[in-house]
Image 1 (cartoon, rainbow, N blue to C red):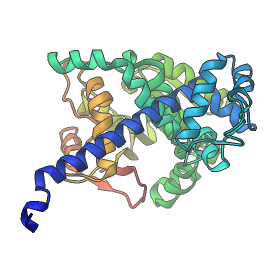
Image 2: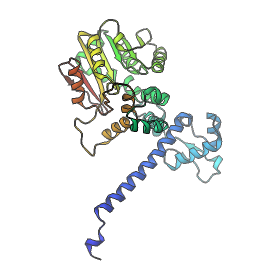
Image 3: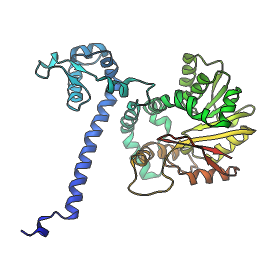
Length: 362
């Protein structure tokens, strides 16, 4: 056989590589499903307290022992857990959660707490039939339909940043924003969700007051509970209402990771401009996607498109009329929305974050 005939064709090579990629993705999807179960059932939290046998885990979490054993064995085979003695009887094997993995799976304030993303992906799987229907009809699946998994996972994913670097490092690094925080300015948080951005600002800067606005009732209920538990309810108020109902003007008006979800973003940006003081700051924080479409894209671009096709675009298109932005809102798209809303331009602030870009609307 000649060298030419012995070499695989490009098609064969590409097929084999893609088979491996897709098979790896299946294993990853199974890991995400297992992580979803571990989160919802409290398995990881129980294991973070110390090693457990299957009967002990089941008793600690109020679950069925046979399921607990199979889940533990899967997690050990997948390298998430370790087992003290693999040769022991099945019910006597003791499983451990390594501390490095525990941070990712149980430390809700760690920037490395990625588990909420797994919960979001797992939760979206419950709505595939509705998504198929939406793709065929051109309709959507609303945030309310996505329900508890989407709300709680979204809030939990952003909580470490919103309570940590954002109010304590990012915002103070911008002189104009730092001035508002130091003089105890009045802040409006549009699309506030569970309220962690507003609460984080209040905890880090004890003189500011914040009004959070969101039209999702369950999110506002959660935000109010969170503010009380954090001890800032006297300075942070949440309103289940459109920000257009705001009373008075604000020194800083923010919208964190929500403009791309809005069916009518121009109207929201107009409202933000109207409720800002004449010298106030209007800030939009949204995904740090590439400035131009190109393919293939990096992991961040893939992640954002993944959220868009299963969550953000369907949510936006669940309302009529809708511009249908989707998660991948590039700077030029926001610039166009801002100019239609009466702003002169947008300025990208020099804040370095892996997933978010910070825009000041001027």
